[in-house]
Image 1: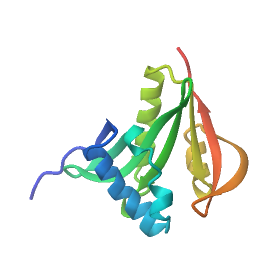
Image 2: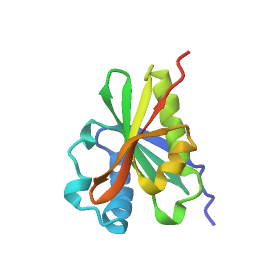
Image 3: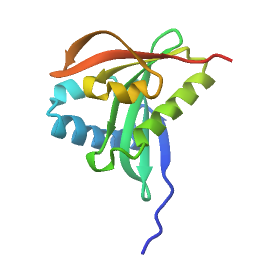
Image 4: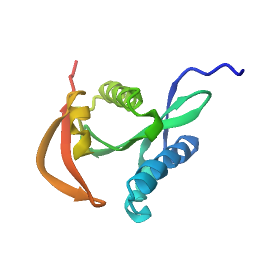
Length: 152
């Protein structure tokens, strides 16, 4: 039996293996499971984003997120997704904590995201606060959330 590899979070700007693996996850979660159209999912930003992928069992991609700068010292987090059979294991939480750590090291003051309504409590458990009204994105209810980062 082959020994299982340690979990790894890899990040990469723009195109490459990490984006390819992120798209595999996003297609399964958003386009197949949630029935989001390819037009809504492929928004033209991916080549300008920093992509994160959580890998298990010798580089099997199971969870992903991406970030991009939206203003002075503000990162937008998006496309957070975990394959259905791997949910509840803390993989997305670990990616978000890594993003936060990286943001603090770059003097980013705020993280913003648009959470699916059913996931708001997950983001609240990480210190995000919801604001504004519920809105539809790709036919799914979302709400904006933000987290102010500690500055040392």
